[in-house]
Length: 135
Image (cartoon, rainbow, N blue to C red):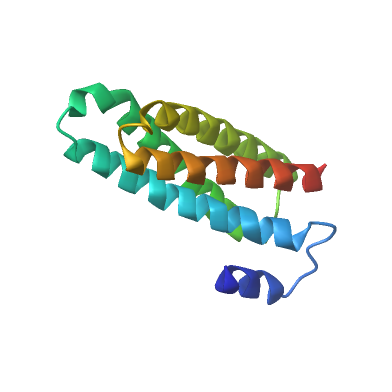
């Protein structure tokens, strides 16, 4: 997260009342979750009973895309629109909850699903925390 926070700190304009630590944590959690969900979907594809994991794979890939988009939008501060940011954070939070719930159902059999569920929960919380600082 060092570079994420460094980039926030070097932004040439005032960022207002936004809690910068929460912003940096959310960006980091989004990108970490995107990578973890992508890797979990790939690991699911390598499982012998891949057909049983179809919903998990789909949920992983949806969550990865939404988290990556959220991290990208949060990284751009110029022309900040709080309404778009709130909507995106809510969508990311919902995707992480859905993916975390799905992965938890498979966590007993697949360690990668346990890791993914943990990353989803972390991102879900980071989005919720940042949303409170936008209010």
